[in-house]
Length: 135
Image 1: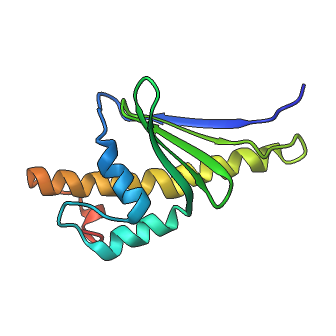
Image 2: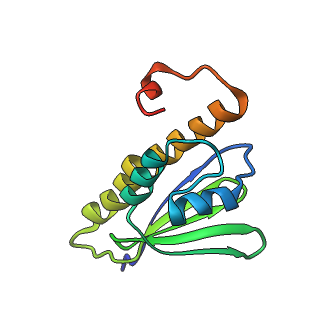
Image 3: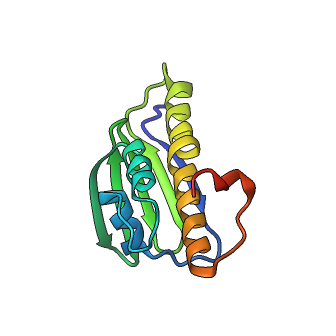
């Protein structure tokens, strides 16, 4: 058996993501909301995004490739798929960890923080103390 690809996925339930806003953040580190621009740029740069595309194929999606060679695809229904095509049987565990670590430490963490900002801005919610230092 030859393993040629590793996938990791996630899903924001009951969500129709506003992909144009996420695309602006991923492409330029910008938001139309009054958020801390320095933090947005810091988060955007930490994602190490290379090529980025916005398209429609049945539904809207954003697709980008990272400096690590990880491909990320985000769909408007909240589905997120990451994959690494540069795998081999000799390094399979490291290849899986590379995708998983990127999702958990970079993508997921920064996207959640940005969503918390948006919720706070739009609904003036009380935010958990763990997020206060970045707001």
